[in-house]
Amino acid sequence: MRAAALYSAAGSLLLTTLAAAPAGGTPGGPGDAEARGTAVAAERAAATGIEFGRCPKAEDLPGAMRCGTVAVPLDYAHPEGKQIRLTVSRVRATHKDPDNSKRKVPGQGALLYNPGGPGASGLYFPLVGMVPQWKRIAAAYDLVGYAPRGVAPSAPLSCQDPGEFFKGPRPAPTEPSDAYKKERAAEAEAYARGCAERHGDALRHYHSLNNARDLEVVRAALGEKRLTFMGASYGTYLGALYAELFPSHVRRMVFDAVMNPDPEQVWYRNNLDQSAAFEDRWTDFKEWIAEHDAVYGLGDTPREVQNGYEEASARLAAEPAGGTVGPAQLQGAFLKAGYYDDYWPHRAEALSAYLKGDPQPLIDQAGTRTEEGAVGAENSNAVYTAVECNDASWPTDFEVWDRDNTRLARRAPFETWDNVWTNLPCAYWQAPRQRPLDVRTGPGELPPTLLLAAEQDAATPYDGALELHRRLSGSVLVTERDAGTHGIAGGPNACVNGHLEAYLLDGRLPARDASCAPRPEPEPEPRATVEPQAGSAAAPAA
Image (cartoon, rainbow, N blue to C red; front, side):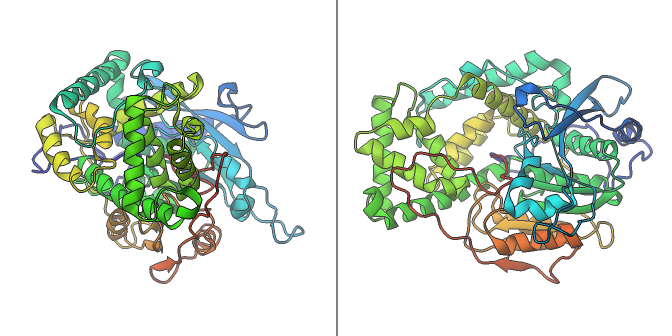
């Protein structure tokens, strides 16, 4: 989940009458056109399978990885109507025990992964098999990723010219004026209009319920009788919807960096909670910088570090670095450090160098993307916007957004208004909305599932893991204490990875909820020049 969002503070938003699949989710249930359509599409996919071959050149995937496509209905209520093709990637199980080269590991089928977003591609996921922490899992499972509907090359969405999407530099006021708010509201309305004009009636079919139905069709196409799935961030919400709709088709499920699935949180209230959590994570980062004042020279208290950040923002407002990095670009770069503490040394060094007269590290980390990168990022944002706006009702009166976020920004200024501008197109969305499912499974309805969460995760606050844990009977929650990296599976924490392997390889879960000590904090790296890989080996999107 990159930014979250939904329901007005009064909780009185109107919901559309678009049908969602019923609780319990028996495919083909009477009167449920989408459920019947999913069953038709899954049966068709099971008969057709996936013809794996070379991956699309544009995706720049290695030759060892194989790709294929799966046809899914644009509209599950009309499974014989227009079809779109989802691109799927796979690396076969190695069957090699990394601890005993003479032992052949039996296969356990496919492990399908969704990295979140919404709007992120999982096509690169099978490459994690090359990472030491994943070799045992890669020995037993075919690692399978895919590009969800709307994500290139799977019937890609676009809502505006990528060059316009990334135009910079931009301001980032924490107390925006009425004139600035009006300007950003007009941009959000234009963006929503662009989505509608480019995609017409098809736009309404890009939402989380259809993403869950797509997952069922991909499962069938892979020839899997039951699904082994791992979702990160928004991927946990997708997995929860699948568990509600198709509980009898679940084998094992891992939920990493858990999003709050409460219908009254999806999405507006989740967004408010996320902005509040990022303020705490920003404080953690400032405290870490202050502890390493001898390296960075940014002050030995969080307040002094904040002063340096504000000084840099003011300077960038007067004269953008490299002509492209303004306050908004600075904020965006430092927001990433709120997701992944691997970025802390690099961002701290960039800020330190800039204040000492060298803007290049900051330009390198926050500057304008390449044309190819801009196209991909605009596509990802278009899918993110379409899915979240279609998923549920949003406040349509800007006064609601203004009231709630003005109040929140007084105590959480770092991310609050940036989150508003990201999600504000949903106030002007022209497609019909879905009704969020009330995900709940009773005893015996779903196989035991594994939840993983960092206690101080800002992108998906910890309360979301507690909420999904309450809603999925038989689930077990493993917590990384006093840590905030977004997505912890397959990362440096051996305790977390031990629980992950025990579950995926042997079906074993702790007898009760468990906790792991935090990973070590990053070490300062003066004059760091190489951008790290974010988060865990299968890092969730953000």
